[in-house]
Length: 310
Image (cartoon, rainbow, N blue to C red; front, side, top):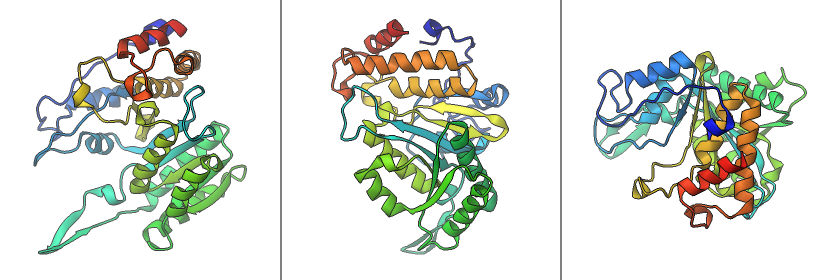
């Protein structure tokens, strides 16, 4: 697809998952991390963490090692692909480094387990700043901070305090605070009311998948991770689907749209527009769709159709 669109990049390919690298304590190689650090940009395919003790999650390792503090997922209704909603046009921005995913849990006594939720001022300010910057740069009008501060007054309270502090620097952007349970209800009833949503880690993990469901699933949803030093790591967030691996059946849309996000980060906007429009046209026509979209096309047939439209 990139070749047909004339994207002027060279790939460095890194394969992971064959054996544990002692330098990272995971199936993620040190060379792959260094490649992203050096190039400041990358495109990651789906990765599954092997089951068993001693194996660190590949995605958690990436976030920690590369300082990927914000996960960005645009969710937009796709013309020609019918779902329950046709007016979804929102972006979830998830704090990626702390919260309940800090990995700090232990057994207090037998039968009692404790998990720590870590919220820091530094991380909260950083993701809030990015959310408002993203909104302004992309012509968005509203940022909604999603929380449960009515119950978790200290942790989510600090997150909200940081969001309010950043909001004062962006008077042109409407700022609101929405309790997460009310957010879920409103998303299901009327998702068009939301624009940009920023939230702590666990809420973001849940809400972003909910939003993907509104437009047809994770197979249609792009994503990128923003890291320290300007790193952008785009990725398809769906699973690795081992049941159809090697069968030429997977839907490549999420990976293609994630690649479009990467191109926009690199300021290759013309190529990004051409690829994006070709994907939308292919889906809208309905002739070439993979099984998850109700069609019978192979990955290759779908990709060829996208290339033809480019």
